[in-house]
Length: 112
Length: 112
Image (tube, rainbow over the protein chains, first blue to last red):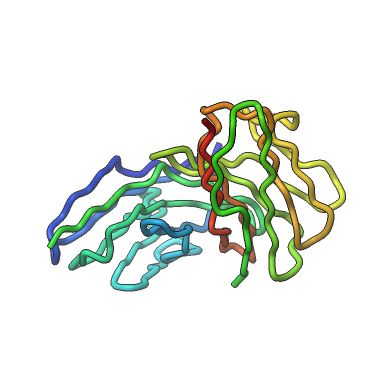
């Protein structure tokens, strides 16, 4: 079946450090891939997405590239800020209109 | 995008009682999804609610424990029945527009 595996957290970084959160997936066909973010006390919101192989999603300085050959969608940011502290979820959707499948989430904590 | 109003935002309930969570979407959708997010865990899909038919439950979730109503294309309720402390979680409703998922703010339930 379909599944998402992302690196265990928590990830603790200093401000301006480079961030990578690994995400790999198992799916039939060609799923769409997402990163969602949950800031403290807030709801889930879409951070970025990619719908086909080699697509790069980007938003707020974050990037992730859909790598079909490695079934990965790693999240990166060149210089994190304290305000990036949140829980990040990798997710996939194999069929339009159906529920997303989420990874376990990775907590990022950035200190100044 | 989609605007989803979910209530209550939080509640503290006695064990053995039931709580009904409401979710209102700003426009019609075919399917609505209910998730549970246990403390420090990822989102687990409870069920898919279709208008005019019974909800479809995921493995490990049953209708007697989590009855769902879907009276029209913009509204759904999830009831958590005969609650125990293990039901303490955040419950989220979600809709998918094309491939993107949108979420309510969540209901933080504490069972004492």
